[in-house]
Image (cartoon, rainbow, N blue to C red):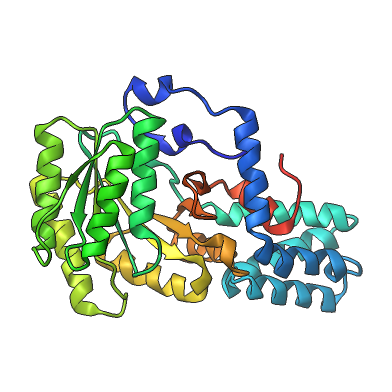
Length: 332
């Protein structure tokens, strides 16, 4: 069943371990929402599979499976590897019947969605998390929701750094989330140097012995080289002040952008050494397979997913649940 926040975060002390575990009913409820909210991806993929692909295992069937997976933005290299594996196993007699084939495909999709260390390391004090992404991907909202969960579910103290100094609305939005999450917000005047704000936020976290500092950054297109260099500068400022920081760099990607999200991830990874992906807006796309393409082709794990606007709709990414929701297979 769905991963919990305690399983996602490595906190380094007893507080997270002592937090109340999520009730099983709540975890099952999230899977139900995930399945419902991924309806577009499931209809594009699962329905096609159930309707035709595994009825007769000939060359046309495997070709249709490839087309279906690519349409869901699983990516050509990942699709080719999965289909070849499935075809080989079916040809050897190891799989018989559509249900067995669907179950095995579910396992292969889940394996493909795993991309390295999918935890978020918060053992440093303070632990610094840098969050970046293209405008409109839900970056600031994601930060606010993470802060809420850290404070209210894990009992960790949080400082938010409003280093998106180019958009006044972003600062106000982060401040509203800070109030809701019980987190301090460090901000500066509009147009101030983002690196200076990040520096101040880390300093506040250090001097006041807070557990986590989360730094918001200005949304930028991955093609804007000068802004990408500015982002790299923010990262260097943080590292100079607190060697080894940021300890996590999360990139928010709008799932509706499909393969363009893969290109975004590549360029952001080059600029700031992205350690994890937050895949948002999965409820609005038929291209949910992009999670697999990112994990396989970039080796960057998806750590969080967003399937709606609600606080409960940002969750730790569970590859097994994701694959089951994508294919319409019942939760385990």
